[in-house]
Image 1 (cartoon, rainbow, N blue to C red):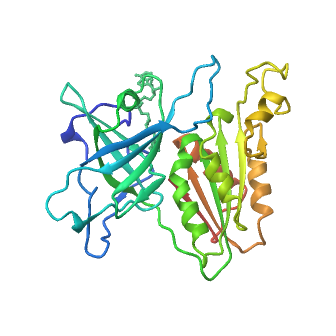
Image 2: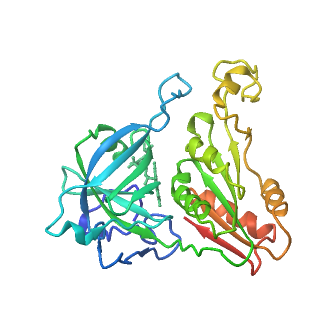
Length: 322
Ligand SMILES: Cc1cc2nc3c(=O)[nH]c(=O)nc-3n(C[C@H](O)[C@H](O)[C@H](O)COP(=O)(O)OP(=O)(O)OC[C@H]3O[C@@H](n4cnc5c(N)ncnc54)[C@H](O)[C@@H]3O)c2cc1C
């Protein structure tokens, strides 16, 4: 099924399976239990919207000077059957949840979202949504008010992370736009684990600085010895025409003022040669490498091919598509 299609409930398993979401194969539903507790989200469950705010409170604008609509939503579990203490919210890092909207026609709209923050015992989670112009679910999300109820189920995914306590390992995380949300908890888990000596190289690809998500998280991650970020802006325009070129050079004061955290950003597309440089400069031959790629199908295919072309794929290389 096409992800954008509106479908009848009976036609869809709600799991985001093979032809429906990412077309990368069977996506397993995670069913571990935590000290005998049931996963509260394993069936569609209503969650209450407890807060809704712009992702970047410092303001952003698009080509026409309008606000770019990227919002963070915080959901808490609502009504639970008797024995609320028997439940927990288990959404492992790298997994997503399915949001369900009932339409007046009797059909449902299902869209996957990747929580970037989860409190298992309080049964709360947060997502970030980059509202698609005229998108079906985006319209619904835009209208949502604090106190409204929304249905979710999950977790859905196939990502497995093994804590690295014995060998040196490089983890390359390549993300496109808002898909970085799916990797935030993965990075946090690695950096928070004092026994994990993996080196994390995050390549965050965005359209422009106003669509550069999780800059505060990236800034905080960069304080760790084993994390390094690389931010690429493929289509940065100079909105105030200071650069006198179609694309911003990055040197004008308008752009420089936007680098609140004094980040180093590259104003170009991330290329296969840069992929080679980052991976070559990150350790000797024989070091285990894991590439985690989050983005559209085209983005994932393109970098998977690049990794293979650069003969980076060896028995010591693993590619994970989120
Ligand atoms: C595993 C996974 C995790 C994801 N996680 C996130 C996340 O954390 N945050 C996030 O923001 N997104 C995430 N997404 C994307 C998200 O699921 C939705 O696709 C996104 O929110 C858009 O949904 P929508 O219903 O608003 O737009 P849709 O209705 O699906 O439309 C998308 C775009 O296509 C256009 N369009 C629709 N129909 C037509 C048509 N017939 N002709 C021409 N144009 C058309 C719309 O105008 C819109 O701009 C994820 C996707 C996947 C696969």
